[in-house]
Amino acid sequence: MRSVWISAAAAAVALGGCASKSRDKAAGARPGSDAGAPDATARRADGPVTLAPPPPVPTTPPGLPPLPGDVAPTPAEVALGELLFHEPKLGADGTTACASCHDPAHGLAGTEAHPATAAGRPSLRRAPALVNLAWATELGWDGRGSGLAGWLPNHARGQLDRTLDEIALTLTASPTYRAHLARTSAGRSDRDTVAAALAAYVVTRFAGGSAWDAHEAGAAGAVGDDVVAGYQLFTGKARCGSCHAPPLYTDHDYHRLGLIASPDDGRGRVDPALAGAFKTPGLRGAAARARFFHDGSAASLADAIDWHLAGGRGQGADPSVIDPGLPPVTLTPDERAQLGAFVAALTAAEPPPARPTLPGDLP
Image (tube, rainbow, N blue to C red; front, side, top):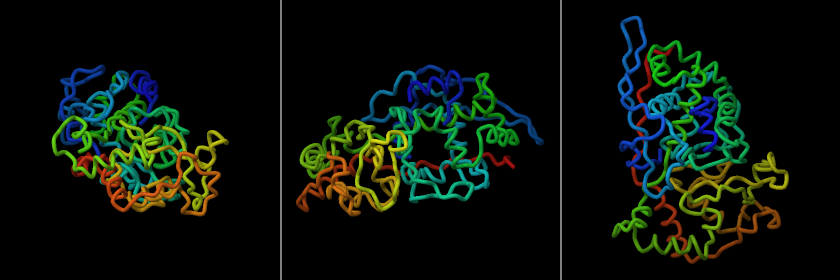
């Protein structure tokens, strides 16, 4: 991801909820910052469009690692990327946006097992949560995306049924979007400006600043004794931490969980030896999600936890093909409640982000 960001920000070939309130605080000086740059204008029939200064780049909330130094989006890129992410007119059907599948109200994750694309086709898998991707090196449930440069342009074609060139051309019909493109371009083409803006928005979606982070920082009373006991189970008897390793609560690796009801080669599309394996999702922000697993077969966080504790046997899978790191684990009812309380404590208690006001002059 870090090498990809260099491509997006410097060479302009990359594309492109659950975040802490602290991400809205002003960021310090960082490479490529355009804070204080002159506002862009574009002419429309009733006069010029003047854009308000963009908000600061979101800062990483407590509990997350330092943002890689070569991930350096500008305020203007993030501001434009937020609009593009929510703009339904970018879909070929005029109603499908990135946010249609990566729902901000549910932690930027999918709520359906196979959401429809803008072309009306069912997607292969549930949309994963787009949080904390600044630290990811492979994207998608099967990791086919080696970075945003190669992944998101193809994703736009597959989900929005449009190329980036077509999206950029659509935007030029709007004086407001033209003003955003002018302010954000830094000498890039409109197509590459769109790519960099979406990349900037995606890599600044953070999930952190949870009650557990406050506890680890020494805040008295941030969590109850049940959560502390749940952490001990998470890292010990329940063996969750072997794959969901802190601080991001993922190992960025691929595992077979015995999900055989929806046939899917998963990582086997990249490495045949790992057919049926899928990427470990991070658990930060998980309590805000509506469904779980690549096929959406778990309808709640509790169901997903119970699936793991049962060793992935729930669909009649042959134990020999399930990851050996997922043995059945028996917990008492109290222990099970404590484990669930800890996982829930990894999600910040705050409302979903507000939907931005989109330009009204895009035909």
